[in-house]
Image 1 (cartoon, helix red, strand yellow):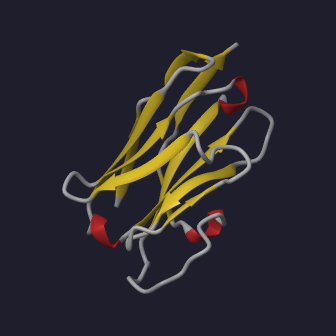
Image 2: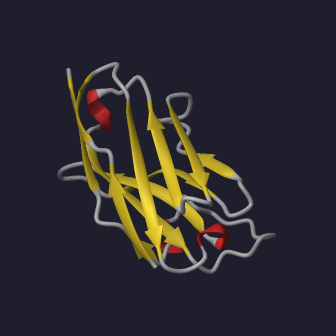
Length: 128
């Protein structure tokens, strides 16, 4: 499976962006999908995830209430709607896939090691 992320850009604080991550190959509906981000000089951090069973997880401290993750299995795409963006949200955003997810699984998607395929990243820059 391959992932292609898009939708990044430059936005003012308080603005919105919607990131998309399209998958090719494999059976998308069977995958857990995650979003991570990496700011310059910092480690990659978890943002949000949605399991194959629809279970959603957010990084509560930084994005909950502002970001929404969703998926469209027919389009093989996962989305990250980002509202009320802040300069601290500036980072390269990566999507990732957990290809070995089982429907009844309960996974810790905050752990980047759960994911075995990563997209190329899309830059999000929020100006103050």
